[in-house]
Every structure is written in C-alpha cells, then in structure tokens.
Amino acid sequence: KHSKMNATETVDQLLKDHRVTIFSKSYCPFCIKVKGLFDSIHIEYKALELDLIGEDGVAIQQALFEKTKQKTVPNVFVNGKHVGGCDATIQAHADGRLGELLSGVHYDFDLIVIGGGSGGLAASKEAASIGKKVAVCDFVVPSPQGTTWGLGGTCVNVGCIPKKLMHKAAIIGEDLKDAAAFGWQVPEQVLHDWSSMVDEVQKYVKSLNFGYRKVLRERSVTYLNAYAQFVDAHTVKVTDKKNKIQHITARDFIIAVGGRPKYPDIPGAKEYGITSDDLFSLKYHPGKCLVVGASYIALECAGFLHGIGVDCTVMVRSILLRGFDQQLAEMIGEHMTEHGVKFIRPCVPTKVEKVSDGKPGLYKVSGKMDSGEIVEGEYNTILFAVGRTACTENIGLEHIDVKINPSNGKIIVDKEERTSVSNVYAVGDVIDGKLELTPVAIQAGKLLAQRLYNNQTTLTDYVNVPTTVFTPLEYGFVGLSEEDAIKHYGSDDIEVYHSFFQPLEYALTDRDSNKCYGKLVCVKSEEERVVGFHVLSPHAGEITQGFAIGVKLRAKKSDFANLIGIHPTSAEIFTTLNITKSSGESVAKTSC
Ligand code: FAD
Ligand code: NDP
Image 1 (spheres, rainbow, N blue to C red):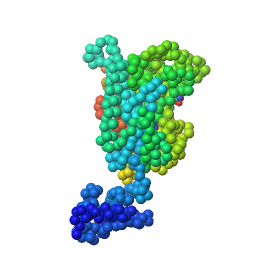
Image 2: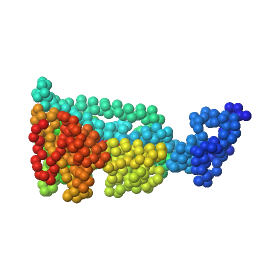
Image 3: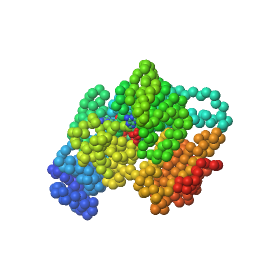
Image 4: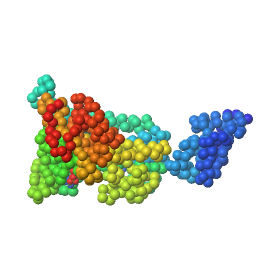
C-alpha cells in the first residue's frame, strides 16, 4: 500500500522513466480520447490506470493533485512537463506545443508580441489570461522632432485619446459662444491657454501609460521597453534604450508594430515640419498653422486647432476624405470653411524654408496648385498629415521571409491573421487591406489569442465597422458610401433617404442651420436593406455606435421607420426620414 511519500516517488519515477505518462482511469472517455490522440501520432506512452490499482490509485491521484493542482484524469506529462487534461493536451497538439515538448525544444515564452499598442496589448493580455507565458516589446523611436512617449501605442499617446480631448476643448469654445443665449454671463473675450490644455491632456495620457504597465504586471506579462527585430522565426533580438541587447525566443509571435506619420519628399519638410506625433505634446502655442493633407488626421487636427482659436489653413492635394462618402466629405469642408478654416486646393507643397527661429519659428511654404500656379505663405507651424507608413522596414522580416505588400510595406495575412510564416501573426494598422482603427486592432488581437490558445474559431469581422471623423461637426458612418453602394449594386437598385436637421441645442442661437444631415443608403431589391448609414452631427460617434448594430443585423428602412424616436434628440431623425434623393424634394429643415 502506498504511503503519501511513496505515491509522490512513484509519480516522479514514472515521469523519469517515460517520455509520455498518462495517469488515467480505464473507463474514463476523456482518458480514452487522449490515449487515442497519442496512438494517432504514433507516440508511445505509459498509461497508469488508477482505478485498477485500488488504494494506491487514490494516493497517486492525491500526489498528482499536490504536484499539479489538477484533480481530474487524464493527467498528462511529456518529458517530465505537465501538459494537463484532455482538452489541454488536444489544444497543445493543435498549437504545436505538444510537438515541442516531445522533441524537448524549450522557448523562453509561449508568445512574444512586438508592439504595445491597441492590438498588441489586447492580444498579450488575452493570451496571458488563458495561462500563456507572454512578453510584450514596446519601443517608441523618437519622431524627427525628438518627441517620444510611453506604453500604449498610437491611440493612447498620439492618436484617438489626445485628439478627442482637444476636439472637446474646441467644442467647449463653440458652446461658450452660445452660452449667453442660455443665460450665462461670460466675458466678451474668453481666452484659451494652449499650455494648460497640453499639460492636462498629457497628465491624463501618462496616467494611462501607468495603468497599462500595471495591468501587464497584474497579468504576469513580461514588459520589455525595447526594440525587437527578428533573428529567426523563433528568436528576436531586443535592444533597450541603453543599447543593451538580449535574444529571446518564443513559439509564436504577433507583430503589432502599427505605423508612423509620413513626410512628403520635399526640402525642409522633416527639418521644419511636425506631425501628429508631435502636436499633442507641443510645448508652445503653434501660432499660425498650415495643415497638409485632407484625410481623417488632417481635418480633425485643423478642426480642433481652429476651434481653440488657431489661424488654420488646410492644403488639399485632391479630394477631402478619400474613401468616405463624398457628399458628406464636402459638407464637412463647407462647414469648416464657413467657420473660418481656410483651404488651398488642389495644391501640393513643394518646399519649406525657414524665415526665423523661435518657439514657434516662422517658415515659408511654397505650393503648386493643380493649375501650375505657385502659391506661397508664411506659417509658424506646418503639420504634415499625409498618411502613415507601416513600421515593417527595420524589424528583421527579411530574416524570416514574412511577405509584405511592396506598395505600402504592410504585412499580408490570411483570414486568421497568420503571415506567410506559420508561427508569426500580425494585427492592427500593420496589416494589409484592413482598417486602421483602434477597436479593430483590439478585436483582432483578442480573437487571435483566443483562437491560438483557447480552442476558439471566431474570426475578426472587418465588414460594417462603424467609424467617426471628429471634425467640428462630427461625421459618423457605417457600411457603404453612396458611391460604393452604387458601384456595388448599380444606381437603379439604390434608394437614398435623407434630411437636414438642427439639433435642439443649436436652435436658440440658430447655429449651423441646415448643416447637420442624416442619410440612409438602401438596396431596393433587398426590401430596402440599409447598407450605408451616415450622420453629420454633434455626437455623431455616439449615434453611429448605436445604429451600427442595426446595419450589422441587416436592418431595413422599414425597421428604422418602425423604431420610435427619442425626443428631442438628433438621432431621432433616422426614425422619420421619408424624403428620397430620387424625388428631388428639398430636405432643408423646416421646424422642430
Ligand atoms: P499602435 O497603436 O501604433 O502600436 C504599435 C506600437 O509598437 C507602438 O508603441 C510602436 O512604438 C511599437 N513598435 C513599433 N515597432 C516596434 C519594434 N520593432 N519593437 C518594439 N516596439 C515597436 N482610431 C480610432 O479608432 N479612433 C480615433 O479617433 C483615432 N484617431 C486617431 C488620431 C490620430 C492622430 C492617429 C495617428 C490615429 C488615430 N486612430 C484612431 C488610429 C489608431 O490610433 C490606430 O488604428 C491604432 O493605434 C493601431 O493600433 P496598433 O496596435 O496597430 O498600433
Ligand atoms: P490617409 O492615408 O487616410 O490620408 C492621407 C492624406 O494625405 C490624403 O488626403 C492624401 O491625399 C494626402 N496626401 C498624401 N500624400 C500627400 C502629399 N505628398 N502632399 C499632399 N497631400 C498628400 O492618412 P491619415 O494620416 O489621415 O489617416 C491614417 C489612418 O488613421 C486613417 O485611415 C484612419 O483609419 C486612422 N485614423 C482614424 C481616426 C478616427 O477614427 N477618427 C482619426 C485619424 C486617423 P489624396 O487623397 O490626394 O491621396
């Protein structure tokens, strides 16, 4: 009969003597399944049937519990290492770990994530919570102007978060103009202090950086503030701020390195210009500003800069908001123009020259209009928002043959976010052909970890992702632009319902009359299913997030009509839209 000590010794001896040991019970279906798995891959094992050895079986099961904290059978060991029960063994087989255990290969980590931004942090936290040993390498290469920041990636430090807070600063300024009509006695001249805003925003960003480090610690994720480069498919070289180098290994890798702003290839751009990487922590008032570019970042930044009192001009190469519904994009442009933002279009910058030093300095920008005319202007700050480059150039991809799209440097992945190398995955802004949005990166990171380590199969759904451009009048949309819907279904099959509206909050001062706008793009042959939802309105992000579920669930125009509105809100307009574009009727707002 086994004493406790004997049972422990028996277990240890079995683990020493056998490459694979299965503590089993002869009648247990899960034990039969696990033994079948080893049979199917032709690996010999020692199965000890605990139910057939009487009291000894009970003692051994207790000894196993003390060793592994696992009470149940089967309890599987490979080369002395505890694998777990039936599900864990099958998962280890599926994700390749069983093969490594059998061959005696050892990696430092189950997973190394390169990039601690939205996608990378989501994936690493998820994998760690499933019990994997995870490391995250995050390193910010200073911008050409020397700006750098903490853990959390673009969104937290130089993207969504500071941008939205500064957008709010601008909205407060607009609201102050209406305050008197609501009885507030505000001084005639209300001044905005750039430095206070930047300080407060940066304080909040730093609190988020701290929070992310804390969460990683709590989840036992190893955080390396170091730059990672592949050496081979299982090894990265990591270099920290002090140039200390180490090599670490992992079974799997997730590349989530995001992107950084581009500069146009013209004299003086990098030397004198700044980008969104620098703007949100700029130590001095930007002065008179030129924003180059016409997409999300350019228009959002121009919008909030103008809103807080900065003299702002936007240089547009071609159209506003390429890829977005052009009717709404032009409405944004008109609204910004009416409020005092200047546009130079179509025009590209050709050179930037220094006029004088200072904080800010003064620079002369030359530009070439489409007509060939040369334009010149002097500005204190030139903000380039001409797109972003994926950070794939210097991460050693050439050593492991990860395929990239040569036209944009982005990583090519399959629908499971796997690259051309089987143990290397990629999520977020760095992947080719997908949306560059924080929630998209987070969802992809989380689902990938669940598929890799928790037997899940759900793929990221990149269709019908709602988004909002935080221009002074926000533009939210989900689904297709009117142009894309026509391209996809043909103009005869598309019906558009639309209307201007004025939020009640704007009525007392008659602010922005006939500027807010809602539009539903519907497919006639599918009972007017709504394939495009567009709104230009304050709080468009909040409105769009809610309605997006309807579009995702294939709601029809009649579903919107059957929905009872919430009065008085801006969003209720979508429950009462009854004028079609094809009717040609006026959609100017008339009354409440
Ligand atoms: P990132 O967040 O960029 O993280 C990548 C990280 O990897 C960075 O910290 C980087 O320094 C690090 N890194 C790179 N290479 C290495 C390496 N070799 N080793 C170690 N670390 C490395 N999205 C929205 O949804 N809503 C918005 O309102 C919004 N506003 C935005 C405003 C601006 C101005 C910008 C620039 C972007 C905005 N975005 C917005 C987009 C959003 O920020 C990105 O889609 C999101 O951050 C992408 O996450 P990611 O994980 O792919 O990469
Ligand atoms: P985009 O690539 O979307 O746009 C680049 C803009 O710069 C275009 O208007 C382009 O003009 C113009 N441009 C490019 N090269 C030049 C040049 N040499 N001279 C002048 N103009 C030029 O980049 P963004 O940086 O605006 O945004 C990147 C991504 O970040 C977005 O796709 C978005 O997913 C994400 N983002 C999301 C936000 C949100 O959710 N609210 C906010 C900000 C960013 P042209 O049209 O002629 O090519």
